[in-house]
Image (tube, rainbow, N blue to C red):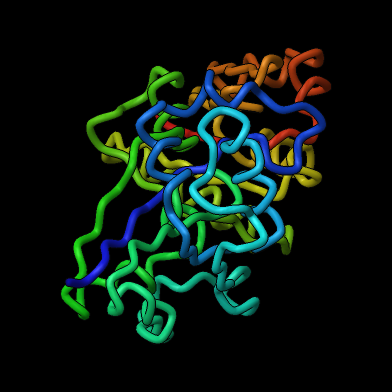
Amino acid sequence: MKGRLYLVPAPLDFGCKTQAPLDSVMPQGTLVVAARLTHWISENARSTRAYLKRVDGIVPLGQPIQALQIVELPRELHKKGDHSGDFDARPLLAAALQGHDVGLVSEAGMPAVADPGSSVVRAAHVLGLSVVPLVGPVSLLLALAASGMNGQNFAFVGYLPQDAAQRAQRIRELEALALRGGQTQLFIETPYRNAVLLEALLRTLQAGTRLALASGLTLEGSAVRSQPVSAWRQDGAARADIGDAPCVFAIGK
């Protein structure tokens, strides 16, 4: 009997100064499955152990953390991602072929969505393994729902270019898509560059375009603000409050 691949969401508070109580953001059923898994594929083994230590405080682990088998995705995939199909993840699933259920986990949110892991999911399908996504927080969908923008037609486009000229060009392209077809455009940034990206958006976007920021989702200090660019430009307090918590940006009608 082959094992299954479980996609295990993680809380969205990785790297944040404060953490939400785990049982307030993760369903009990997800924690029960996570607690019994003994084999893991992770974005970062250290953060996975920290997460499982929190799980153990609610649902006792089936084995001590030190006894768990945790393999990491290669470091080069963390930056460029593994969605292109170039990386063969089949060797990482050897334990599943031996009958062990395996958990796939990223540092925050759902693995393989805005995070590495899609290569593992593809490999599982190639190997004939059952793939079981578990319920948990997905920042992109939480931000979209709270934005008031089109939730029937949307796209996640990852990170925008860091070069100022290239970033401005990309912003104009995404705005054109949003205004022409009504497709909400979602993107993210490394938290310490949130303010830089916000200012670039306000310089580049048209006054009537709607811009939403969803910051620190599921945390006590979470904030979602959605308003036209013209209102953002006049709202100095909102711009000053952006901070360095994980943030999802959205533009649309």
